[in-house]
Length: 168
Image (cartoon, rainbow, N blue to C red; front, side, top):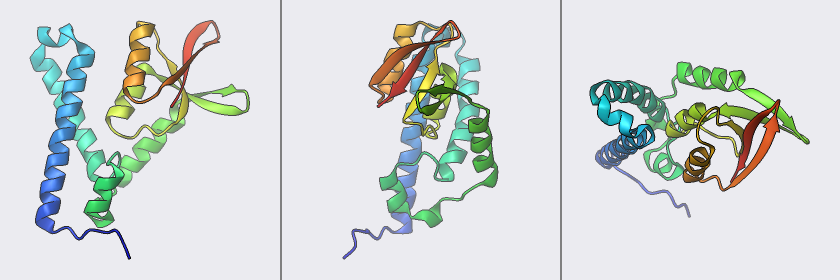
């Protein structure tokens, strides 16, 4: 016996539409929250940037990247259109990320901005990694990382700079 549920094309359309609208709202509200008071000072420019970035995020979602498993299962793999340029773009981004050898593990070092961008696009996959908070307020960076479900944060020093080793 299989747990698969047969979903009509009309139901798939509604499921997908609701998912996309929810993801878009979550993304834009998250951006506004991250920017804070600066958003109010220049709404038009920020809204333009959010919309421009959303187009790329939605393209990735339409490829199935970052879509939760339960929705992929409902929609079926044939619903998602893999776009070679998206896959290549992700691979090249990950190849450019700097790494650090910690004990027996090689960990990727992400800037805080790259972590947020990749997470918001649903393509962040590392379970253990290093965050370079750069010149940001360290406490706010830690809180933000924890909002994404990472609870273990260890402070390390690399070449005189403070970094966070992060895991779930």
